[in-house]
Image (cartoon, rainbow, N blue to C red; front, top):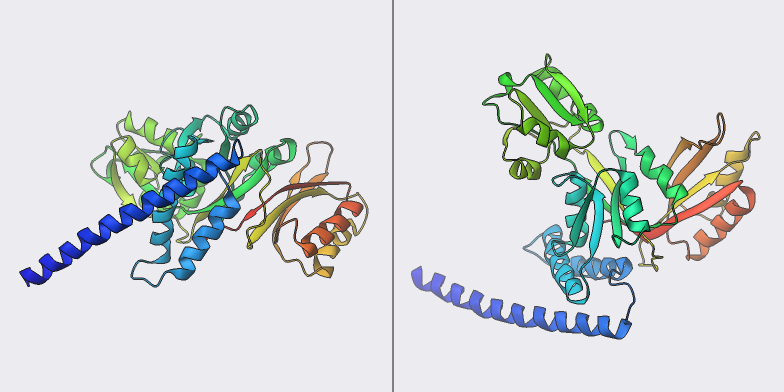
Length: 355
């Protein structure tokens, strides 16, 4: 048996050397492409999506597709860093799910810039202080994030990509046991997502909303008898124990984040387009506006409304359609919507995130 193990380890050493050689060759090719592009954008969401989909299709195991994608995202991240360091703004402080979404999308070689609010994330990208931003847009349990939707309408930035992040909440504390917890800090949405668990296990504890779960962890770490709802990453960052894991009421709780930037993304072959519009104030107007989608066989995957802020009972409608705005059917449908609507803004076309 020892001889077999030794031979296999020797083979692994040979394979590792070949992998290193090929990764280095890939990096040289990527760097040369960067030189040929000159000052063009380093981040090409459509190209990266095509690369990762191709690798998933080629993968025959034993590594699962998700693991293969993570490995190659890190390789792509390192290759991008040879051209330019990417600065990505996100809703901070450190340890938030937004930071986790940045790492999932851009890899560990991107430089994260924590911001105090969603508005500040937009401002950092608009001013050029960061090349891109990552902001939450909706949660599978709690619905849309109004501030992100409002800023997408008023900002000149576009959606360049999306990230789907499964949310697994933990109860963090420096207390010895759950029974010792008298106060629970968390973002308001996280408190709502864990309402059932809190009612069963900490019915008498005060629930205190915070600007983020990372801020909740920071505060709880400084107080006796306090706990926070946050991620395992926050537990490590603020040196707290995980008293309970996966305390969210819905096991499939997922937050969708979008990448924002001053960039139009080319078609990748599997895309989504996000649109904002306002309907004229007359009977049947909304039905009339959505009709072109059905007529051109364009599938709508999301629809919601927000008060416009310009008048009483006036709303902006947000919807996503499958396909890129340059696709023939999508372009035709949106042209008809634009001709009928009081206001239309295409928020961006971008690759669909892998689930």
